[in-house]
Amino acid sequence: MTVATAELLDLARTIALEAGELVRSRREQGVEVAATKTAPEDIVTAADRESEDLIRGRLADARPGDGFFGEESDASVSSTGLTWIVDPIDGTVNYLYGIPAYAVSIAAVEGDPDPNTWRALASAVVNPASGEVYTASVGGGAFLGTSRLQVATGKQLSLALVGTGFSYDSRRRGLQAEAVSMLIPRVRDIRRIGSAALDLCSVASGRLDAYYEKGLKPWDHAGGALVASEAGATVAGLHGAAASRALTIAAEPGLFAQLEPILDEIGVADR
Image (tube, rainbow, N blue to C red; front, side):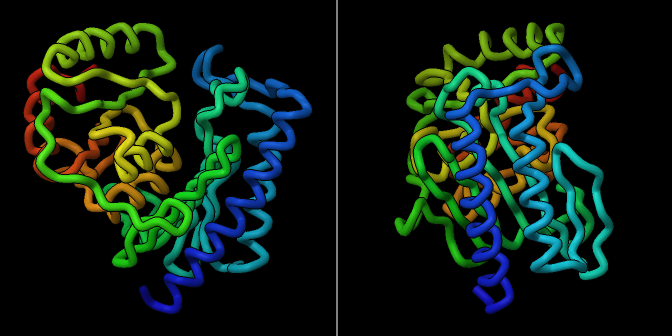
């Protein structure tokens, strides 16, 4: 890890922890739904906005030339070649219901804020409900707290616990459920946790063997994807494409090779 990357990682971790404490305290005070987005089920809480404002302000103070691309506010252009990809609360519906699986995700990427072309440098994913802190830096490995993460190899698909997620659009959810019905006889079981960032980190930590989802926005997967890849997972789309809104798959390389053709066969990228 270079000095510059170490500084980015430290900044991401420090700010994610501060935002996580804000989010946790607001959850204790009660959650207010501030707006809906793509569907009535797709909500924004006041805490989402407050968390993003905090993160954006801290990053602007520390690195004023960097770009910013978050879920709840307008993007800003980078003059340094580096952009921060931020999800102030990933798993907002879990947050609303008090389910302890939501996260603050902050990633620093080099290049345009496009997952098809960027190079992720450092990230931090904090679960405020559990206090767990996932971090990763390019070439520097992935960690849960101070414990280094490494995916286990040799997993057979029939014994794999696979995570996924669903669209907020009810029609697409139905199509995605059809795909799950075709996949589930071929794997150990399916989990739908409700936070893409934590799903990707769960692949890194061994809580899931694999994960796939269509429709992820850049802020949904930027932080967790680096954690998973630095733990040794392959994180990609179909046929060598980058992980993106089209499809994101994460698994250790041998399991990825088993899962990818089946996901292609059952048409998950078209649902």
